[in-house]
Image 1: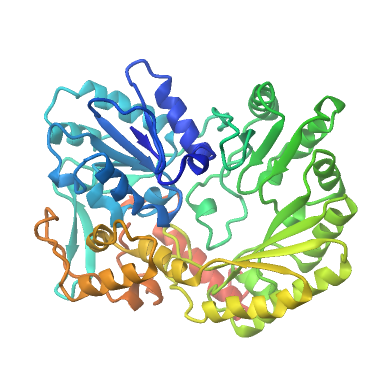
Image 2 (image 1 turned 60 degrees about the vertical axis):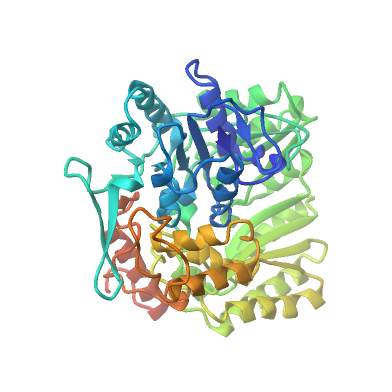
Length: 532
């Protein structure tokens, strides 16, 4: 059973979910069924594997609802020989699986192109062994993490000291796996029932070369990879266009594909006059007249760029290599190319941010409106949330971020600029999930069925702190009480602190991330690179 923690229309739009399903469905030794929160394929009489991919922290607790629905024990140690092996993957679990670790038998860290087949192959080889022996065999595959074989160790003050293997022949750390092949992914399902109906999605690039210091999509997926035009992208696009006339080009930095200009010229041919083309967020500095003209010609009405902040100081600090002039040029090109709207992504609560930086963002948007009066401007703005394996993993959520979200709306909405703020309250729950260790698992179990209510989380966390949540009957190993809410969500941590994901290796090691962390602080202080 391959599950997705949302409805069918959302899940079937996920390119990652589609590719995992297709990879499994192609195998003759597996009969895979799909499961969504609102529907699913006809279930098996017996289920040997239950899989879930997570791309967003707030989807994690849905796992428990799905397990209960399938009558699978929630906690991995409660499952017996007749229960399926519950496995998961995706960026959330690759970054920090620890809050959900007690619910998973297996976590796949990294790209699935080779990792998923290796996992299934080994499982088939050992399927006659007892459950514990099967899991032990899986734990020796690079990139496969079996949480039950790794024990968190705490000191007398309940601070995490380390996470170590419980058996001597298991690796002390598990490294995220990286696919380095020439091809990336594209849609395997095209349906009118998807959130983006009848669209063929093609992954143009993976990762991003810019390395904004808060960005999980950049740091966790390094190195930056791009398939060749002739052997990778064009065949993938041609295949999809036999089934639909809607094409979506996806990636964290699509326009930085080294052959993107050639791809645009190819899509500009008259034989593509009847297709609708959309492109995910593009780097503002790469926007030009050819891009906006072709997007308009191919049915796009708007362009999306990420500016993060209107403050040049903040953009320098986060390593956003973007000058104010390039933002204005992108708006100019969008308007002159015939596009009706420009969507901008911004963020509040970034490290070192002051109220004056929020004013800079407002002033930038207001000036954009003056210089391109016919262009509809929309600002989508979120609160900075620390992510594992990034240089800002040590920074907590700024308590002033909620006020600053309201400040932007107050300054921009009356001037005709649409502001779409993300919920500050739910950003704090994201941080709780992204920064916690296994001590959060009883809290997640407690809020199942009501995890969409902020109050449920705070009530359950308080109960866990006070020792009122039962753990001894649910946990194989009783855990200390979790740290204070403020410590996990809002406080900045010292780089010397043992992190919940200390035993999991990302693309960059801790020494490199600490170096990037201090480079950011030096940018704030005005220290030239190399002089810190």
